[in-house]
Length: 458
Image 1 (cartoon, helix red, strand yellow):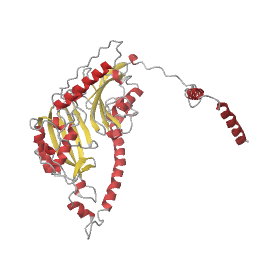
Image 2 (tube, helix red, strand yellow):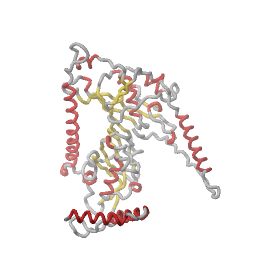
Image 3 (tube, one colour):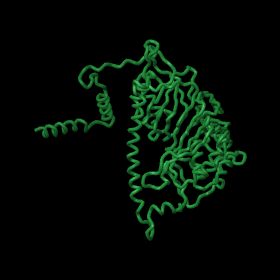
Image 4 (tube, helix red, strand yellow):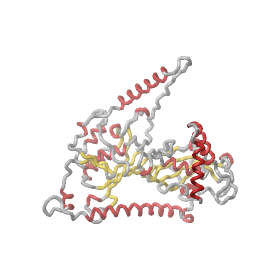
């Protein structure tokens, strides 16, 4: 009986719309959609829903604090927010959402926000520092808001606040940073570490790094000199069980006062070429000599995956690792450590699965005779040669071309001239496209001069 009723109802309903115009149908659809999107005035349990009142920050005290942020950057399009978190997810965007949800800030644009470094897509951070004005319990209450615990409850699993510190109203995370330290992890493979260390020694000190970065003419940078305080290459993990020595992992630890855009990844790319004996260590001295090589040879950057913003150094910050500074009673550091340990166990399990697959194949026969895969991998030379880019990435080519024999990118001066010409042409186009009946004055904003040696995106 229900089926007969449903068929009769459907037939009658459809017949009502047969003679409707397209506009009438669209109006009907819009009306139905608007009626279904009206929020219910009752909660799930049937009780009347209370309307949320706008949060009034002026009723609360505020203070300027710094936050130490740790994050795995693999799932994000960089650290700095870009305005559309749905299409371009960022670490900073997730942080802003958490801060707003717990009513520590109202608007990210009105909280004196500053960041120490702009890490790029896929790059992770352990010592990233941001500063901002947030809601405070003081002086109305004796205990401050537990900032670390409050924010972490609302962050995704791959982002955590490690500590907070009170700072002065004039503190700026970017300009008050004394030094930044990056780490880059890589498997040994067939790299000659002694040659890499020799090449790394040429980076120490103040140099012009324009051939070790990505040039951006819109920033109008005129000073490409940066100071590298230290650069070390050391082992961090032994070879995988049942695998060759080439699976052991090493790290490059690079400390400097500030860095240019993609400077660390460009440095790693050249060190990999030196370690593969595709370039001699002295190529680094040549590239640092801008009077000899005015523009960067065309070479790919190293992978972003192994790069970590390890530490940002400041003077006089009193880091508090729990809400009220009492880390022992709250156990906050323990919980954060256990959180990272859980993620480590998950990813280590995946690593061990791959490692087991590799170990099981070492006895496989290859080519003719009794030659095994293990002995083949120890003696085989890459043919065609591959260029290591880190993070499991390689570029294969039929024949390696030396850096100094490659085409050169545009020099800094040429890039700036092209940028100014393009900007001028756009201004002319915008002016001529304006209707003659109206008078419009088009002014071009001066190009900023970013000579201050502060950190750029890596």
